[in-house]
Amino acid sequence: LLLDDNEDVVDPGIWEETDEGSVLRASTDWVEHRDPHGLEKFEPSRNVEISLAYVLSNIGGDVDSSMQVSAILPIIHSPFYSLLEIIDPDCQPSDTLISLIASPLAPIYTACIILSKSTQSENENSLIDALATHTPVIIFRYGLDQTRFPPRPHMSSFSPSSASALRNGLFRSPETLLSLRYEAAERFLHWREIERAVESIHISNREIAHRLLEKAPSWDKAKWEAEWESRLSHDVATRSRENTVTNRPANTIHRPASSIVDPLHFSSLIAFSFSLLKPAKARIMRSISTFMESMSDCRVRIAVVGSFCIGMGVGWMLR
Image (cartoon, rainbow, N blue to C red; front, side, top):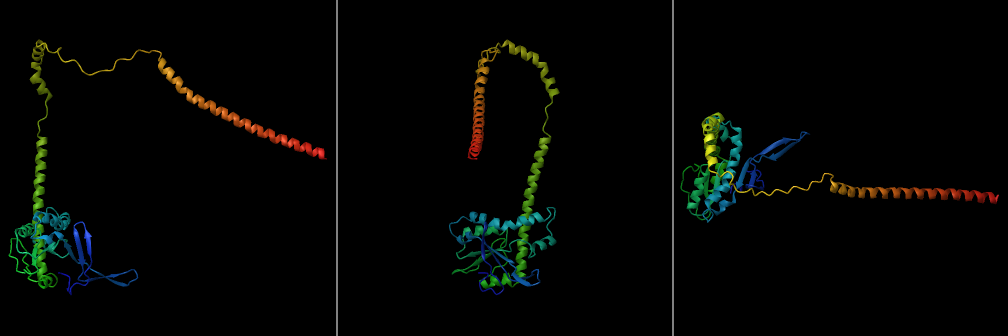
């Protein structure tokens, strides 16, 4: 609708899938770059961003408008929060501020275009009323019914009657584009004032709660003792005369019976003696193994010496 047969678009780009929907970044100009060797290189500027919300295709159907609004508003508010962090919270709305927000470099959406091929319905009206206070809403009818959509509160002043009029207004009319940018900036400032008011209410509630905690009465031990110490002896005597102190239910907690006294700890000594058997056995086996290895080495030495002596004897006999 916006890019087909549009001579102002030099690069249509491709659709990219994001968490918020499909996004298309087209270009109406080329950006010149130079590499380290000084060679010129031209790349698309990608200065036109189009976000597509699929829920809009069901306008006039059985889809609840509140579900559609909950899907579209996060897309519109995403750049709002970025601007909110940059602008000083104490900065009041002014001509200078709205001019800065309406500039082409500000990351806010210029308009929300609703494509409608059905007759006007209550579901469609609810959707427009919910979005019109957040971004300029443009209604474009296509199909058999191309009658102009009746105006509603806070709708955009730009109301094209055809696809060519829509493209000319967005790509070839600086006055129309600037008007839409100012409308978008006004809605951002309205949203910002709501956020500031809500934040101030929360801050005020936190301050009130903090003051109430600070003013909470603290316990005065001296006052408590002065008020109740004089009645202590009287209340103790009254409680004693009731004869119910010793009639409390027996303690149901079962405590383990005390073990038999074993001053010499025979059981511990026996257990300790048995625990020494395993390491003693291992040590004895290690000693026997070492002895057997020594004996085998000794036998080898004896065999070598014997062989040497036999060789010497054979040699002498041959001579």
